[in-house]
Length: 295
Length: 145
Image 1 (cartoon, rainbow over the protein chains, first blue to last red):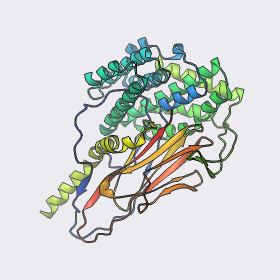
Image 2: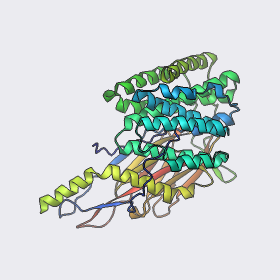
Image 3: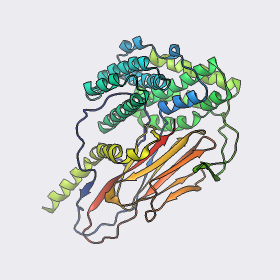
Image 4: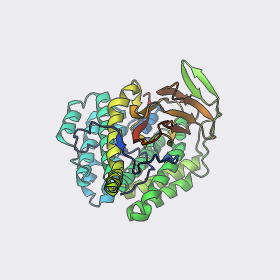
């Protein structure tokens, strides 16, 4: 068991149901007697928690705010779910369907949300993610299918549970594949909605994916030496990274102003943008990679 | 007996990460998340199991145009913790001290960027046969839809 103190913060896509749903132990902290009777001076240690990737739910919300319209035809066909037999494909598409679920939910398409939930349920079961999607969660989703806020809340909650289960059972590589699949699908969705209705705001959101990609690469790299599937995904992400090399994310300054009682960090700076060539290259590459994952 | 207690301690410590991770999540969900409202949790779970005298950092991406709430929630066994929000150049944008704690910080960013949350747990002042206490510190982010 890894005794590492470095923790990964994961933003996986998902609406998956949880691990067992049992009661958590009442005690939240652990008190351990010292191994020596004399007081030991603990060396100050710094833990670095990194590899944080914004969730597809937030990304989908940003696309909606940027003027994207909903198009169910760009999402992964629900019928593909039965084609995924290898664990790596299942994990990648758990992320893909999670991103699709986020997109459908944010745009208030509850019927499709339930379809993608069903896909996620099937894949979770194949991956043996605890007692994936216990009847309670499915029941709650069904009861709240017409209540967008409740649906999003349940999705978020179950996503937490699955992510936790994978990490606590040393299946971080599966989690990494899920996150990668979710990020690729999120970028693919952004590229497709931009193709349909190209705006500076949508291009900005695509350009900004350069930042989470850095963390995603670091996360995937952690597991790539031990897992050929993860190595392959690493190669795909490195391809994307090369296309983002010349994408500039302008830096604001460190000023803090107030806007109706809320602090605003940074002054005016140009927003991130993409040239036509950059957009075309990113769109083409992510489409190819995504096709490899879903087919 | 001394060797046996050492062995037990080592075995206990070996089991520590998986037990604590579940407990940190439970603590975050039950004790920390209520303070997130009306912001929507961004589904990203960041937590560390820290002891007095230890530090943790996490880099987070924040998007322009979003309103965020950054919540640092430590288990009471640790007491109050120090934490700060830094920009990419290391400039301090917000600070919460243990003797003047602020559980959260609401903000927007003018441009999409990575910021760093840095936490340190004040060292205990007990000497002698001090118990080694570890507690969860959760760093949670919410945004306004």
